[in-house]
Length: 434
Image 1 (cartoon, rainbow, N blue to C red):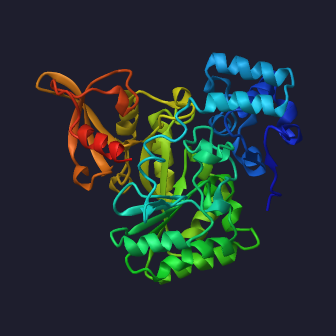
Image 2: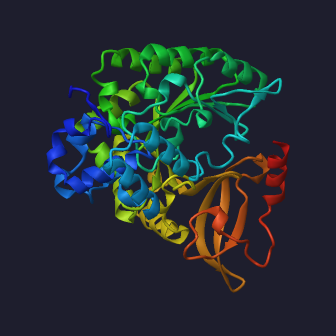
Image 3: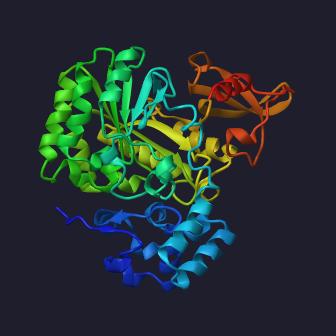
């Protein structure tokens, strides 16, 4: 097994490829990393990045900060502080001012998604959709490496008042017992796969005796960023045995793999990890945003989905870049995203058409851009809720005026002369309640 080494802006000079980067590239990384979290490990640097093609290499862009992730004025400000070797507190304060303007917790996560018992908020738990609850173990608030597009960047940025985390599973158990409509529990972070097998058991085993919980999901990037977690770490066999225990208990275990590029699952280490996870009876589903500079073409998505099918991974979601952080750098117009999706989707067999997208995970719910079409002489986006804050909205179609530049629901206006989308008044009521 490759020895695990982790690199941040503070120890970047120990990276073996350090000397292969220009001084300007190194300065960019350190500057942008003062605002957005940066962490990469030796598996990514030695197995996935094509160092002969930086900075254009998609895995390099996925894991190393890029200058255009910051507004030019913000970049120049932080660059000056880094070059002048300003004190840590001065840099931290300047970074905070920029971070707090980047919509750090989008889609009503803090206001609308935090559930309550006896009017007390349950920190580290989110309940947006009737059937599903998210739990954020405190020990999972880190990743083996950070994706530059990650919409949960505040979790890793020291913004403690904006962080979701809980080290006590009892509030989750109490909440699930009080809400039998919840069938699905999702463990997320960060990445739960940074935890030991013992910690994972601590959080998940109590759920196995709750009959109303039917499915357990684990959201993780470990297949891509550190596949040795399932093949060579000291407790890998213990972890996989626990996966078998979950399945044997009658629960469906879904391993939600974040895979952004086909190279991530071409490596033999990742392929072996996939085989070992699937051998436990767990299903692996894949999801990722479509992101400029990384996977913004149909060929990449078709290749990635085909490779996933070969390995027994179920293509699940293509997301659109959320309205937070460096969205301006990664986002694609809706029209371009749906064209890429459709071009890749048409080349898949029926088994690959399990994938849904492109999807906006916005405050009302998950809204899919179904297509661009012409109705009643008007060019429109056909949109559909695949998940919704009000379950009655789910699977409902609605239409927005076509726009070449729109990249999010907030950029759209209703089609056919309507003043508002059908869900807007009820969303106002949700917000007014809080």
